[in-house]
Length: 119
Image (tube, rainbow, N blue to C red):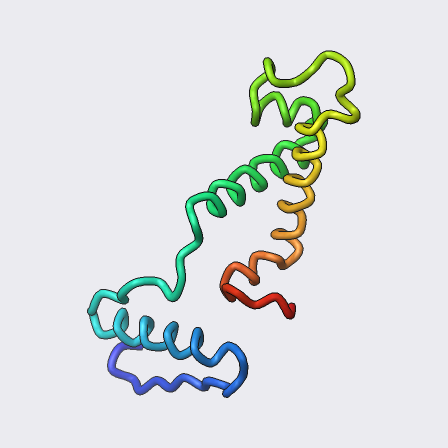
C-alpha cells in the first residue's frame, strides 16, 4: 500500500551488508528512483555455465540421454562414435546436469552470496 510506513528488519549476521544494500534498493524503487547497480555481478563465464547447466538439466528431465544432451550442447561432430563412456564431454555433461540439479535443490541461493563458501 502506497503511503504506508514500512520497516526492514536486518539481522546483524554475515549477510548484513547484502541485506542492507537490498533494502536500500527496495527503498529507492518504492520511491520511484532507479534502484542502482546490483550488489555483485556474476562473470560472463559463470552466467554462461549456469545457462548451460539449466539447459542440460531441462533435457535430462525430459528424458534425454547424456549423449543426446552432449550432442545438443557441444555439437554432434565433437561426440565420438566409440569410447563415449570415458570421453571428457560425457563427464562434462554429467557434471552440468548435476550442477543444474544442485541449483534446483537450493544451490541458487549461493549465487546471492558471493565469496561465501561456508554454506
